[in-house]
Image (tube, helix red, strand yellow):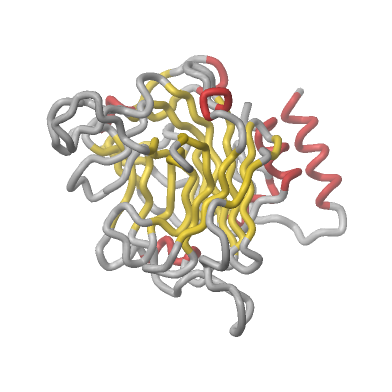
Length: 305
């Protein structure tokens, strides 16, 4: 019944609007045309369950790093299969943490929609399932914790596996961990951060599925965060013009380079080191090449519950 109501409301919004692209199950019809990548972790590549098929238009295959098929977990309820991300060994520096992503030093051509992009969005269901932030396995101090909790991001065209073009994550802001949307318009340039006001523990309580969304407009310099379909109050962290939006040419877009990949649950999808591990589950992860509208975030949340 909920899905029928959502689709009915969507049809009303679409009156007088160009028809959307071919519908994808579980995706709001108005999002289909701009859905670059979509992972529900229920579509492994035939013959290799360590790879996840992309249900978006780009066809960017995702690697389940270090855990392979074991990272696909049944969660019950409407979530069915999700991906488990976690720290494996907190005492030793290594490359065994469970994370996901894709990486290429020369850029990932299938992600070209984020080259010269004016807007972007990242949406996902997230459930915290263990200690976050995780112990920093790159230091000898067992009390040292990572300063961030990695969720999902699109890398820049010059990224070392950490630097991002668009990111949904939890990072330190003025000494306090915050849920943020973070983006960098130009490769090698400065980033801007929009940080939610509410404590992150309230936004992502342990053992509870939460629907998060981050939107990015590289032309106007605006970002937004949503939780369970509703916008979050927040603030921009960096003063001035970190994205260098002033002056010509217009409109302002990202660097015209193919992103070097996607990172999920921590940095370095090329698996050369561990950083900012998230012990959590994720599901219905979407990357879009436009800023999703507030009413679309709300309806996508209801549709995917």
